[in-house]
Image (cartoon, rainbow, N blue to C red; front, side, top):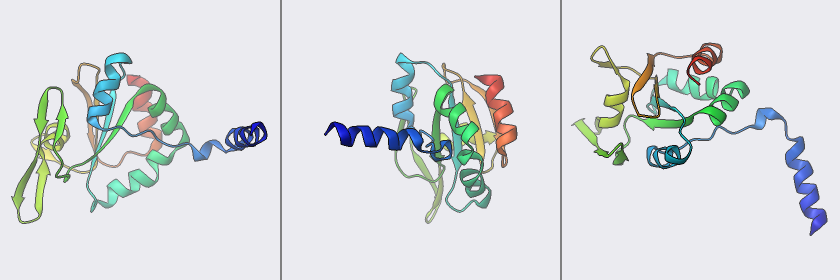
Length: 154
C-alpha cells in the first residue's frame, strides 16, 4: 500500500505544469467560499456557438500563467449566457429569459455582460468581493492582455 501511494505521489509530482487545471466554480460555490476566503470573481460569459469564446477557452484559459493566477487569486466562473438553469447569487434568483423559440439570454449574463446597452460574447467581467463590477471587456482577450489585467486587480 505504501509503495502504491509513493508511486502515485511521484507521478503527480512529475506531471508538467502544462497539465494544470483551471478551477471553475458555480456562482453558488464561489459565493459560499468567498465568505471564508474573500477573493474577486472572474466571470467568463460565453455561448456554445461563439467562435471567439471557443478561441479563448482553448488558448487564453489554457495558458499556465493564467491558470496559476486565476486559481490562486480569484474564483473563476464560466457562464453560458444561454443556460436555462436558475442561478442563485447575491440574494437574487436569476433566470433564463426566452426571446423566441429556442433562443434567449440568462438574466445574469445580461447583468454581467452588458456594456453600452449591448451584450457581446465573449465578455470577461471581474467582480470585487462585494460583487461590484471593477472590470468588463467585450472581445477575445489573449493571455498576455489578461495577465496584465489580473495582475492589476489581484
